[in-house]
Length: 147
Image (cartoon, rainbow, N blue to C red; front, side):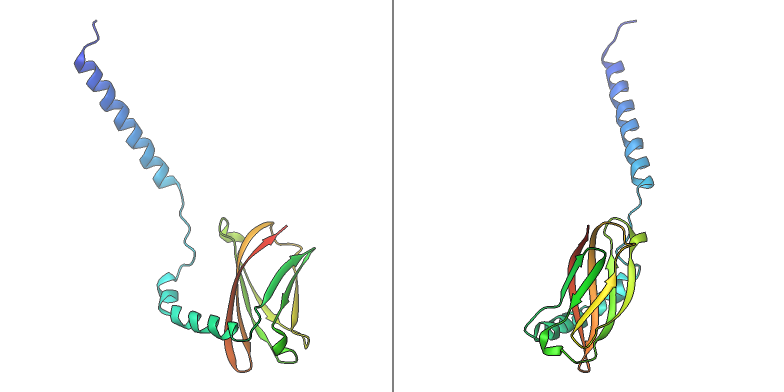
């Protein structure tokens, strides 16, 4: 049997169909996790986030979040020492939503808060700190790396 043009066309079309089937299988089996389930509701409140970021920046200093050893140290601006500071810290892992955490925080009179980070999986986190001081809501966002 001699190989001719018709056989070549059949081989190319078959290879193309197999390649498309493989792409479809990969597309269906790959899970795309959303950052949040309620992304539309959060988008509607985005201007509130901008206002809270501006209020946080108005204190002159930024909130510092550092992981050292087995602890996360959160230091608030010096202008807020002695004030009651409470809030929530949302830690989001970009590559593993199962490691996301939501923690309540409360600063001491010196304006610091220390959280235990011993059982957190190592890696990069996006930290979103919603905090309340002097009757106003504030927001600080930062990247954290847990060694």
